[in-house]
Length: 351
Ligand code: SAH
Picture (tube, protein in one colour):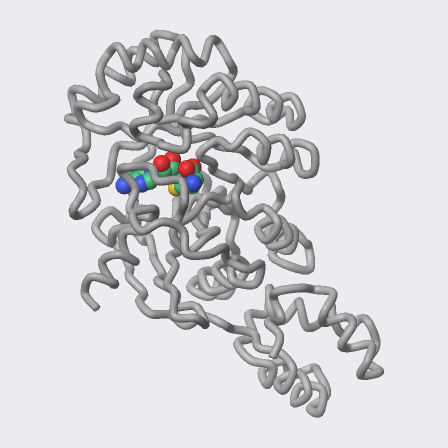
């Protein structure tokens, strides 16, 4: 059986072979993305024999919800079990809008791109066991639909961040079609400007994205401003180096015209000293970038810790004084282990 979310042309080809009009494909996709139909049987404006035939040929869902957790702040996290028994995580974050009637409210989803991760960042739960496999386009889209289904009927997802498990730029072939479907007005209708791809910084893949799809927001995970420390924290840096990462980020910025984001996970007594902040200011060298400072979210079994409040404030002050735009990512869903890979590991260790 085919996964209906995997490839939109497969449905068109199949409908044509059934002698069905082409516009049915659009109607079916509308049910999937906006109508939230959980089954073909629920697609009540389709002829009954077509629904039966669809059911025999296609699956809508290939995942099942292994665990659903809700935090006090409204953050919801799903642990999804894939058809082969592997597990991935995805998160729905709610931010209230400043306007009346909740205008400007965000409903951001954080999705995974791989099972596990090959990048090996020493502090991150996702890569502890390496990468198992890439997610398929359908599995990436299914995360979006599963999370959308948690919202009341009148609410829509507004933003996507590809910051869950995995390295998205190591799986662009499957990620890009999924993000294209997310943008499609007949899909989720989420504009490219509201989609952020977070990468450890792989220059050839950044260049490919700049050439093919420069409209996404790119976030580059730095975590250190000198190569020695960065290679200790982000081992894949050994074969790349910060100069090449920064040059690729600059090329992306030129192609996209969109402000770059750099992420910096603050690890107590490792990369949070004043000298680290000063070297980050000089690495950024006046670029019109945003630095997203993320206080470390502890991972059971790993020796890393969050910085003290005083260290964090001192770090931020030096960045600001150096003219850097800084945003501190407030913890959301910390109590439900919403940081990447944590829930999957907990669930695995609990059997
Ligand atoms: N592979 C991509 C996406 C990873 S997750 C990347 O490296 O950017 C998104 C961000 O969360 C990355 O900056 C990652 O380093 C960070 N992160 C991973 N584990 C974390 C933890 N336990 N606490 C805080 N941030 C973490």
